[in-house]
Length: 405
Image (cartoon, rainbow, N blue to C red; front, top):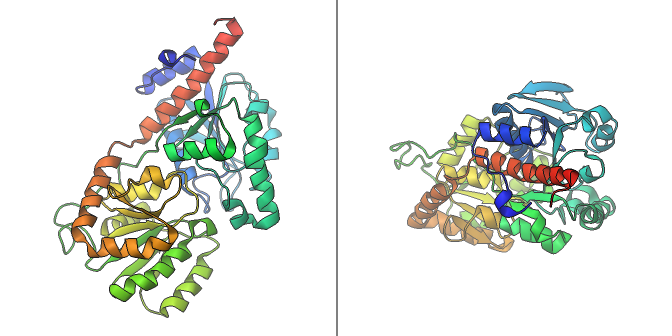
């Protein structure tokens, strides 16, 4: 499609009209996990947020994911249908066994390539768009060990790009786009950058809240919000805190999130700090408590080895909290160095955290600028722009069928 012909979606009515003109009756979204899965993270939240926007516009949306303990096989939520079948690995063949779902006329597909793709270009009968949040790289071996890790990386880096070379790809930021081009060899022209949104519930504390009048805790508070899995490298933050408390003994680290590495991280914390209150693991918390923690923290920290963006960084920013993060693709889009936070090498985490805890003016300036920059991020925009790419693909297919140039 020529650029000037790309449909511009401004709201529900234009979305419905565009889908109708492209003969698209429904959107089938393929994601590895559902947002209600206990192992869900930013990718799942991203997917569910877009699905809700489309459903609110009156579009039929089906979200197909793997099953999860304690969750029903089907549920109607936020205006769209969630279908959960197959395990974390068998979800892919389980989907192929559902031809009526896959090959229904008028079905457009939005697939989330989470390391292992859904191979939609092989079977989809309607227009298809693929979301790739980040290149997994070393995450494969961190989660699955050397053998399966190498196999996963072979699929992601060698096999899948051959099939997806002509697919339309969406990704959250410029640095991840460049990573997809540089490491996977995907063509730059096929990739559209679409930043994520931020839930409007995430805002700064009301004026006058807290001892300092800005909602912050009276003592230096460092916050990590992440699943406790190896790729988040929370152990680096715990070790960095040993150096931080040498200069700032009252500093405290709070970890929100759960996962398979929690027990090991708690053991590390005890070996570093004994049974002191320096590190507290809060596990999973509801949104109200999460917002309270964002507002009270002095700084958010992410030491991840791979991220597509880092939604928690933007949520914290919306609450006026700056971030110290590892300098990796994804983080480079969520954080502007020395403007909304600090991008550093893993070995510089302690120095950067200590710098923000000690320099009140710098911390407040970065927090204010972070809140200003993320104010424009809305899930409606993310969903509309993804639909624009989908409709552009659909219109190309229509022209190809009718023989138009």
